[in-house]
Length: 88
Image (tube, rainbow, N blue to C red; front, side):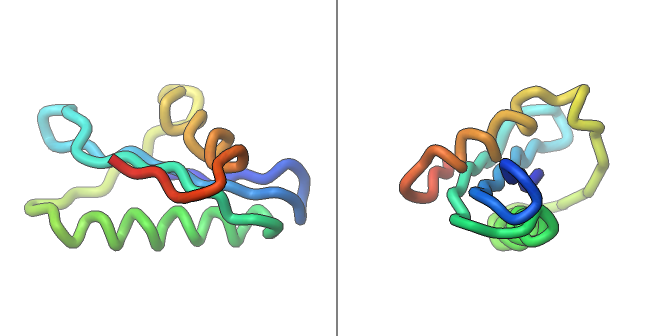
């Protein structure tokens, strides 16, 4: 999950990908957040991901650098262009 802004306190979006232990995508989301500081965008991404994992079993967390995961890196940028929440 990741939050992103176009400047310190500007148009923001967040997004993330939740995968299972086999590497298959279980959920993904991209959300517009309006005008927010970048730290708030990161907090919103974490909050949304935690709400989505409530329906999953055997959850584990890992950190992957954004340079290694272009999908996660692109979702917040797409969220800035959206008018409503997208999740699948």
